[in-house]
Length: 371
Image (cartoon, rainbow, N blue to C red; front, side, top):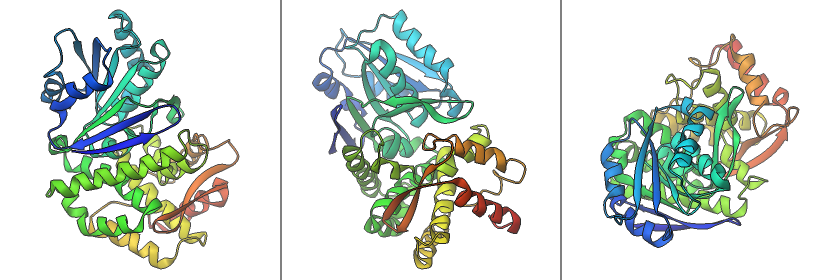
């Protein structure tokens, strides 16, 4: 089992990464949550019940543990299910020493973390991510939140967990589509922070996506968490550097939102599209070389990653997509902070406008019919 330490101003906490480590939950609970008497595990209907049973196994008899099963999908990140969680905590009289556990993907983690942050102004919180995407991204760094009618994650706060427990064995229950979605965030770290990691992913990407080599998979998870922990330590509340983690998300979030958070496209798939658009924009604006853009296109082709948004954004909904981008949390309504690449492994934050960046590029794509 590998261990990482995340250091922030508000809380330092460990990340534990290994295979078949859910059964160790009781050990970590006893070490980091000694005063906890009640645990609510929030999960969704697609998460195998054996994961909950493994968490439950070994807990002391005086600890009460309950499971709350929510619907699957991005649409669950709203006030309705937030209230359902907090009402349950109130009904069962949870105290601040008690604990909420997020068992699932990014949606469950974001929603449960936000509930933990606001219930009695903050109770204990543990992340047990079960998808590759949540293991390498949303479970680390303390971002929590829900969506509203105007966009993703517009209501939320930063709230760090007490610890994160990552079991690579849970990936075996994922469909290939979810593995690709998670790989999007792994690839993101290489593009914005580390060219050597990008080259390593070129060689090992297929083994990760096909779950062929557990050591390779755990290295990908560990390195991704290490990169994110570094950024979070430098900038916990996204005042500057942490914004680079949004590479590909400005357009990606708009693609998700304009398609109604449907199964038509899931978060990681939208990020893959958004990263390619951002890379192309970086080249068009003179930051990224043609050679580096070709390398990015090559890894997409080699690993069969989709970069086309033709099925999701068109002349009929593009104006709505631009409006969503303008309402993004990185925008003040006039200017927006976008993340661009200077080269593979080096990213920059640029404050600009959509009219000078995304709008002409997307309109050109639509006119030419090549997107």
